[in-house]
Image (tube, rainbow, N blue to C red; front, side, top):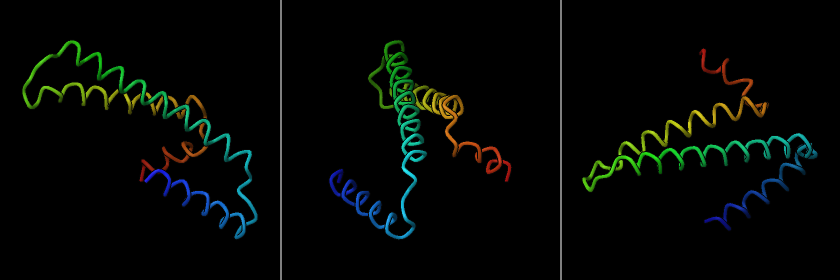
Length: 101
């Protein structure tokens, strides 16, 4: 699946460049790099929080994983929200307007 998605992305970049004359690489690359940093921070926060909760809350029941998932998910959401605003990812400027609708 990863190879298919990579090939599809490469083909779409070629098509878009032919259709509109390019992607203005600099701003797109900067935004992609910032988004990657935000995603890495999100993953680290979610994993760290879930791991910490897993160390404290031990159990063998079916729902023993629930606290780690909830805390890890919440930490990921908070970390991503903070990161996209701190990194000034341009697409997030539209977020408050969209949430008010």
